[in-house]
Image (cartoon, rainbow, N blue to C red):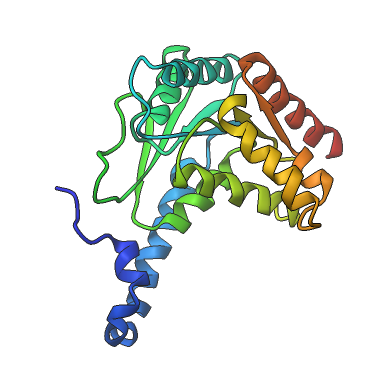
Amino acid sequence: MKPRVTADQHLLDSQRRSEWKQKDAWRTLRILSEFVDGFDTLSDVGSAVAVFGSARTKQGSEGYLLAERVGAALAAEGYAVITGGGPGVMEAANKGASEAGGESIGLGIELPFEQGVNDYVDIGLDFRYFFVRKTMFVKYAQAFIVLPGGFGTMDELFEALTLVQTKKVTQFPVVLMGTEYWGGLVDWMRDRMLEDGMVNAQDIDMLLVTDDVTEAVAHVVKGAAAVKDAD
């Protein structure tokens, strides 16, 4: 049964101010337990890449098959594949990694409208809180590969870019797969954000936009090599 009201909604709901004093302090223990569970479960994961994209991508579609190829190519290079654990692009990337003999990880989230972790996940976790789950993505992945998706995908993308821009993480490759889908967004960044001085050229240059799986994975490998050289 999917919850009609999620834990995040309870925590953030300003309509329930009367509960804050009585319940929020105790909620911190649940939040702490999610961090502990995530750290404990994922601490032995080796090099990994997070793959993001829409849960609405249909099986057998061009986007689904692309995500499968991405997952398989990452596994061939020795990377574990981390997704949000759901259907669509996430399932496809997990499937590609699993069938290629790689480690396939799914970090699910409590939502009122989405099913649980897909069948191709070897290591699965379900989170109540988005911010805990997002910490796990960044902590245990060395790069993000982002396929076409909606608000959730954009959220993960811009969180990663913000963390790199503000030096919270360093040498963190971000790849956008799908030049037709992402091209307009990147053009807007250059023509508006950069022109208006809201970002620097290097902020946008941290993005690789491509349709080529080989190029995408090579960019990830190059980023990992840069980290080793810096150490």
